Length: 368
Ligand code: ADP
Image 1 (tube, rainbow, N blue to C red):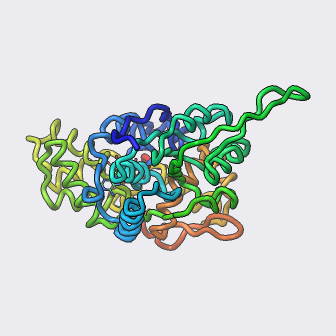
Image 2 (cartoon, rainbow, N blue to C red):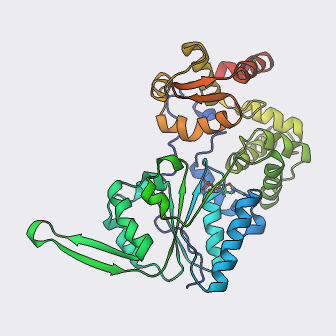
Image 3 (cartoon, rainbow, N blue to C red):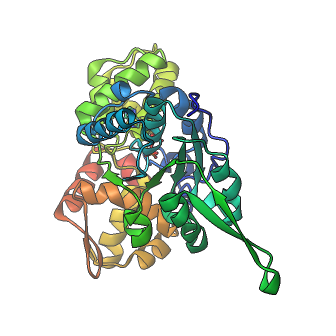
């Protein structure tokens, strides 16, 4: 087992959903509160990413279970079982995988489902893994069927069969692999095939964070970024971060920019409020795209139900952006319901839009 946690050699940029398109009215504002990772997140995320379990805030039950699994594996002197981490983007799946590697003293190699075009792309990666090393596959639900089937024997028996040539000259080469651990992350656990899901010995779902956990994350980030953050400002940002640490960290950086330019630099509640409104983020943390989705369902479809394809087309948005990025929080916060016939808005959605319209006409105009 090697001890260094290496940077992600084949981690590609294609993370969850693409940034929202079709937002010509307010392009710079639309993605600020959305959990899909952008380039700035990638760069700053490295310094803000928790490196050990004691830095990882919240998700207590999952952390406890993983902690036990690590201790047990260490005592037996065995590698960890394969682990599946599910949950919306920005909740800490990648961070968790890196922490697991760190705790196990293992090397981690990262890639993502869409980055693995052919089964052959995986041979080099798999054969280079040492005993106990971790292979992290982000967006594992986006692996092609062929690649997925290629992974089965690797996960189960630590061997792979690779067929070279075609027709009568076809030859199968068998590679024996070291006992590695696969950590898969997915925003759409439901899309994973049963055979793949059943090959993971452990499977956990990460939930949206409570504001008090986000406050702790913000305080830690503020310390790392050398920002003086007043407690009430931390609370305001936490309450508007869609329960998502990545969004909280991003809003913190936007509020800091605002404070530097518009005030003497103090990060007070009033400054946070003003900065978030300027970013199009309303009192409950919804941004232009969220409000646009809700308004579209209400104005065009009488509150629903409306199918996801029709909704995405009407909004000129990617279906995956709506499903992976926008919808999970709207569902969990009770603005949206999913029925057999499509998405429906709730009474809360009507109330919220009316309230935002009363309080902040400028926000409402941006999402019209
Ligand atoms: P995911 O892989 O689920 O999309 P990441 O692990 O990339 O999410 O997390 C995004 C960022 O959010 C990290 O870089 C880190 O700064 C922050 N973060 C996520 N979860 C936590 C946590 N539990 N405690 C502290 N920071 C966190």
